[in-house]
Length: 331
Ligand code: AMZ
Image 1 (cartoon, rainbow, N blue to C red):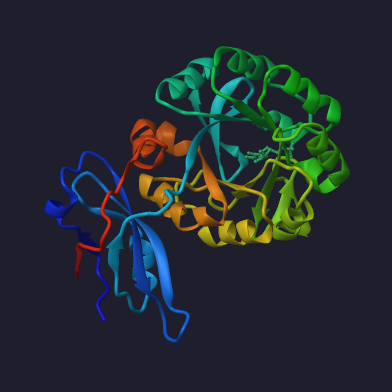
Image 2 (tube, helix red, strand yellow):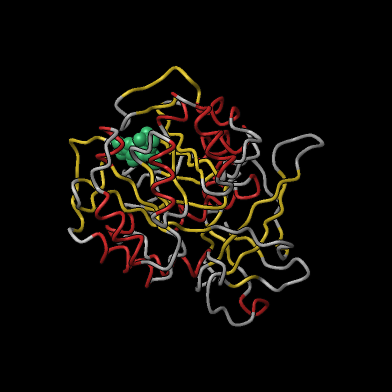
């Protein structure tokens, strides 16, 4: 069977389309009793289907129809600023020898993303992650003071004192990576003392946790580490796939799904976002608790426009108002 490459909604039944519209796609997948499947579908302004094309290509059989969403999936887009020696940079797959410098004024960059509608900012002190020493504090503190949106920071947070100093400076959340594996008790104590403020950063290479600026790889499975923090008050897990980070190649949906299924802690997707379609593809795992995504290089390169992406998937997006299935599929 030739699988459809595009969908055509019936514009007349949709009324005026002024933005992105979200639908639920109902279909059948595979054989046997348990074959009903649901995916969120998203149409752009021209009623072109953006999601879930790649999933559709993988399916043997679909008998889809449209239905309005009962509960919109939420997805927060978090722009990332990685700091190296006071500059905004991106590394390719976390490699400190493959640096692209994007902006020498981190405060201006942060303000720009806030102006475009970001509701949270993600900061990484890359020097801190590598050496364990806070090298970029001047920029971190200046950004935190200048912005009105919450700011989170990871990289080199290796002690309770350091985490608490950052929270006292106005950081909204601290991200703990290396200590999550080396001193898990410290993470649990901090999470208990600061509910909603402690995030675990789990960076994985082939499913195994990497630490210290991703220079060291452990034998611990990323999903096992996630499980070990179940129920201790950690606000979220940032799941970074090192192989895709900084590549714009698309998120590792399987790895994210596995992380989301490993515990009930919300998962923040990180790594590989190159296009708006990549962000939208995360909607397929949003119901599992993946409701935030970190975007870095794609924003600097301009392959993702933050304001456009927020309109497509942020809280203000249009929601389909149809109540009965309609629409058609074309091959
Ligand atoms: O790009 C890298 N090499 C890198 C990076 N982005 N190394 C670490 N980090 C980030 C992690 C996490 O947010 O994604 O630093 C934080 C972890 O730092 P630490 O010092 O707690 O391991």
